[in-house]
Image 1 (cartoon, rainbow, N blue to C red):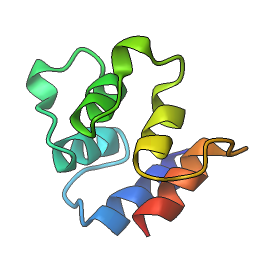
Image 2: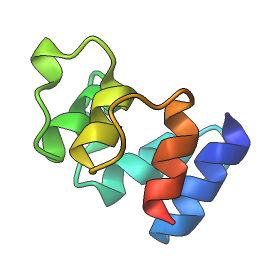
Image 3: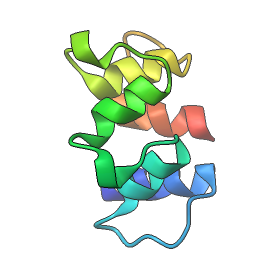
Image 4: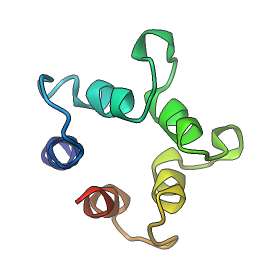
Length: 84
């Protein structure tokens, strides 16, 4: 998953983060303040207009909000493709 997160970060122009903090940089890209976040994926989904409070899968719903397919077999790779 780290390689996919690295590619998502690269696609979004996120730099300056190591492998352990890539999601923080991606969250900041989407307008999330990681210092006030209890769950980065929840907050990323909310920042993009999704309904995280009723979500059963934050990443899948984020892909849908970003106009990806609703029935992707590999959600994180679909997120990567959307950012490319």
